[in-house]
Image 1 (tube, helix red, strand yellow):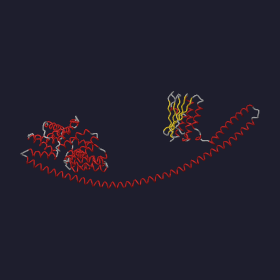
Image 2 (cartoon, one colour):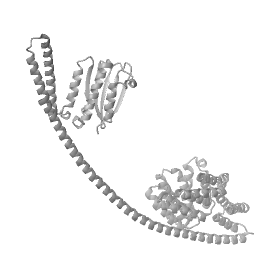
Image 3 (cartoon, helix red, strand yellow):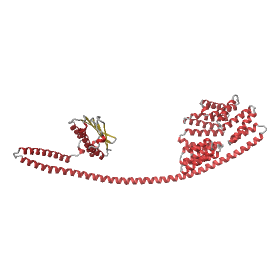
Image 4 (cartoon, rainbow, N blue to C red):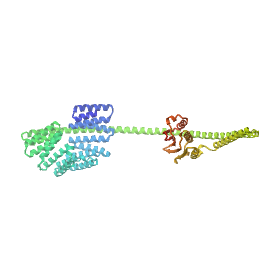
Length: 581
């Protein structure tokens, strides 16, 4: 609805614009969308301003500004204030306009908005030009020029130079005025196409400045060229000014009829557009230019001037009431804001205390849990050590003793002169000795060592060395960044078994000549990679095999990831990644 209302505004369809604008505001209010409500007031103010209904425009801008201020949107609040200041200037409330402009500047300067600061200082320049304070006016215009350069909007310089030229013209400094008008006209060769309104204004002002300086040579074609452009683009205020300037020219050229005709055109257009300023100027001119109707126009001028002064006074009073209401609203808002701030601070303090209590409670719980875990681990380690020693004693004192007894018995029986029995018994004795030696070694390992005490890297190297006694050539590559002592036994044991299973599969099925086994670490992940140059296989079919199932089960138990890649006659790769961080 906002978009539709804006299109109606551009088409000049006032009835449909107001209807859709009002509907958009109602919808926005139902949604509690304050920004959208403010925008409907902004658009409505622009609509009234374009029709010179300045009191309604000011009121709508004020409504929008009040909303933006309550939302804390300083940028949009400042822009609306600037529009309000321009309206105040238009109804000759110069003091009010200056105060509002300075208020806008105070919001814009911290935000570093050079383009809008240019508009603000340009408005101050116009205000002081109207007040005939030309030095102040010029200084404000120069500040505006600096902001334009900062904003990288130098295409707007001709408009500013036009304003400076008008100020010098009003001050009687015609040479300076001519310099600025000339500079503006030559700045952009395409100005007549890019900004025809400004181009026509500069032509008209340049010609009028020449006229005021006493030189009327060649200015009539320039006046007419400016008027033709303004007629083509229906620039009504410009047409009125042009007609008044032509009226002055023809009066001096003693062509009273043409002077009066142009003044009457200006008066009629001013009446139609409710432009009181130019209506007053055209009636004043007619009162001086016509002899037969001079008194009538003079009386009309007095009447219009009185009415205009009353209306401007009433409008200024209305603006003052609106500002008073705004001040009251701001004071109320500040009180509410302070109250909200106090409540917020209390809430934040309470929240912080609550969070601290929760953190302390959780820390206490964690400390208790840690103590319990440490005690549990201690008991577990103690139990594990006791169990290891028990098994060691059982193996050494029980099994080994019994085996020794069996060995002795067999030695005695070996005296029986039976060759076959002797051979069998000798084999049995040798086997028992082998078992005895294996059990002795196992007993020794259980008694004195654990996996964490074993040089894991050496264990891996020994395993690979044993594999190189067979057909396939194995090589081992271990990342030096791996700190094996910091990795848990369950991970190391499972990786060792996975490596054994993978190597066994290569021996059985791959028919490979080379195999590389790599251990790598990266970003808290330990990877085992087994890569061969064998005949390859179909990974999906092979997953049903017992070997790969065992590997997959071990990987899943460690919370790791298994990745198998293989191509026919191009070898295979098995990659296991396990998080150790």
